[in-house]
Length: 357
Image 1 (tube, helix red, strand yellow):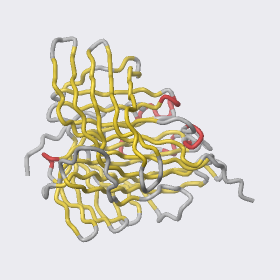
Image 2 (cartoon, rainbow, N blue to C red):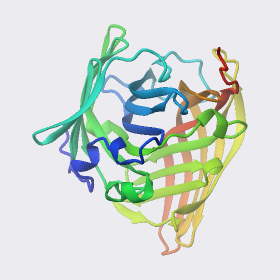
Image 3 (cartoon, rainbow, N blue to C red):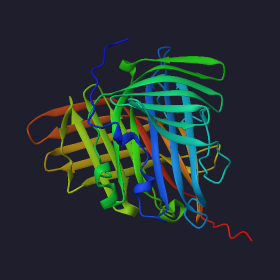
Image 4 (cartoon, one colour):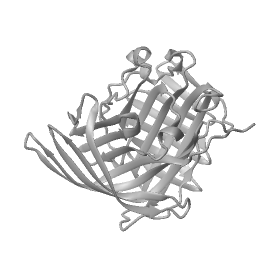
């Protein structure tokens, strides 16, 4: 295995649960989750998501539960090198409805680790290292993750949570270990993977109301020396970006906002859901420090769903690749070839409240 230099700016305390720091009675959502993508040692492209959420706020709140731990798992493995349009690929995944029956979850600090547990899985947090161990839906995972850069606290630092009622970050990582699914073992290595830890505590939104006729984008791009993250959520006024070149942050945000364009160029009718899904985009990010232009094409998909008061939402995770350029005002220009790309976006699929009697 290649030696990876561990880099992080997050603390062990950042890994704890903080819903008790929000105002009493405020509905909440908390996540300690991971997304990893890349190539297996056997030659497939893959993506793996493992999230442990803590949500609550009462039966009349957006999640319609008092205090529940719930989980999300998706796993996709597909032949490497596919080009030429979307595939109706197989994947393993689950809906993430708080009102379903979930096993008891917990968060505890044990020595130098914070451990999030839900059912048979654990997220063991010792920054700059993390472990994802256990099983869900027949998927067995034993992964070690290493921080490979500083995390942007785009939701704010946890030290200010009680003042702002929101805190959280996205932390770039790589991963090594094994994933077993449907009778096959996949080996993954640090040098062929990229991903992130997402950790936040915030008030709960009625997502099915906010995303009615709207969408959002949560995207990562990675090449050998360039990483780009955007969180583009116009309906809640969020347009954030984080760009690094060889570990150096290039500022593309001003006062917490970025000039982002995600132009949807081509759509695909998913045979499984009959939904019309964007699968080609032109992405543009501009600031006083430069311009990034990328053409993006998706090849494979996963999806999951939330249930909130106003209905159910659908969220697609699209395995994609991107080509383009980054031109900086300091004179540096980068040709961006075959960037590994993860596109997540979602919308309200069932805009109906329950009104059960």
